Figure (tube, rainbow, N blue to C red):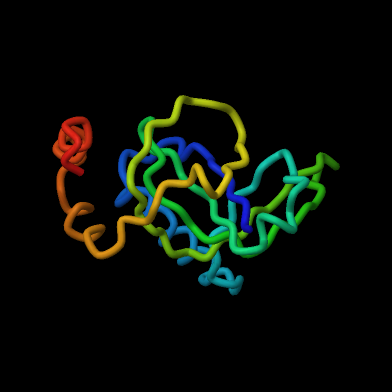
Length: 145
C-alpha cells in the first residue's frame, strides 16, 4: 500500500495558483534543457522511500486545507554546494484536486497514511476549481462541497 507525504504550499492562494506556479517551473526547466518535471527541494530525506514510490503522492496544503496532490516519481538525496544534505522530491507535474480537508500549519513535510488521504474530486473538480475561493470555502463549511 502506498504511503503519501503532506506538505504546505507556502505562498499559494488557491489550487489554480499552485497549478500556474508548477507550470512555470516546468517551463523554466525545459527552457534550460532539463526534463519537464516538478521538483521540490527539502532538507530532510524521507526514510520510507520504497513505500512512497509505490504509488504515493504529495498532498499540498493551501490556506489551511489539504487541497490537491501530485504523484511522487522519485526521491533524490544530494549535497548542496555548501555540503548540506538535501533531497529532491520529483513529482509528475499534474495537479489533482482533492476533497478539501482542514490541516493545521506545520514545518517540513509529514507522512500521510493512505486511509487518511482525502479522495480526488474527480469530474466535479474543473467546475469547482472555477468557483471563487471564498465561495468554495463557504460551501465546504456548509457541508455542500
